[in-house]
Image (cartoon, rainbow, N blue to C red; front, side, top):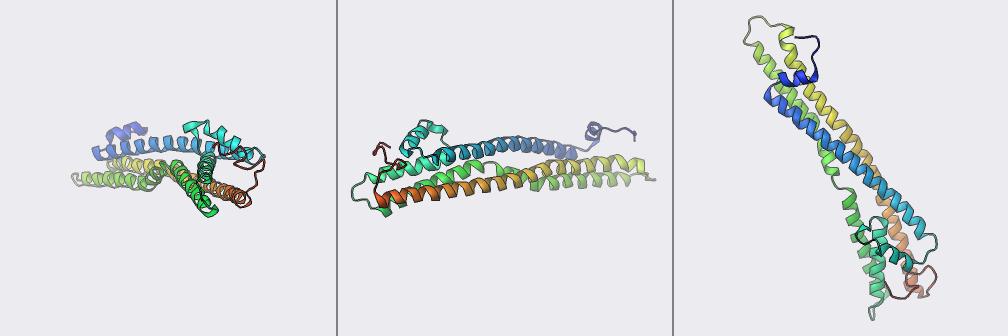
Length: 239
């Protein structure tokens, strides 16, 4: 065995099964890092947009005006804006229905925001299951390659009269590389999954709190009937 044996040499000397395991682990690692960078960007953007919109929402702006600003974004409405837009639109629509009482109006508004909330959570959680899968199965895939490589190394020993470390070392080294690659693919995926799950939980809490607070504002409007500068209907039923 040469003293200097590179990873590429180990890969070339490995059996076909171990080579396939290594290739699979490399592909899983690449996919994992691609998803990590993508999810990180999306979640950071979601946090920033939610903070920016809530500042605008609580600044005393007329909510009918804010609704028009959000509506102008078209398909780019996301996050807290989506909850606000869906709730406001349903609230204004139900207020125009004859003989509609406050309970019916608020029930419809809450349903609309729940649907928007569910869609936003689906968007944020997209591909998280892939990270979880990579994090959980990569070590086992690597372990399979290790077991297979060591098995082949010991089978080869059975065909010789005198076994030496020099004969078995390359096979064991090739096998252990598969385990190392499995851990290399799994560890970042697990760390990212846990971090993103915590981050999504925090965003989810902000969405729920906003929906509750917005519901309270609309409920006071329904019960009071007075139109104020912060009322969602302060510009009539244009929404």
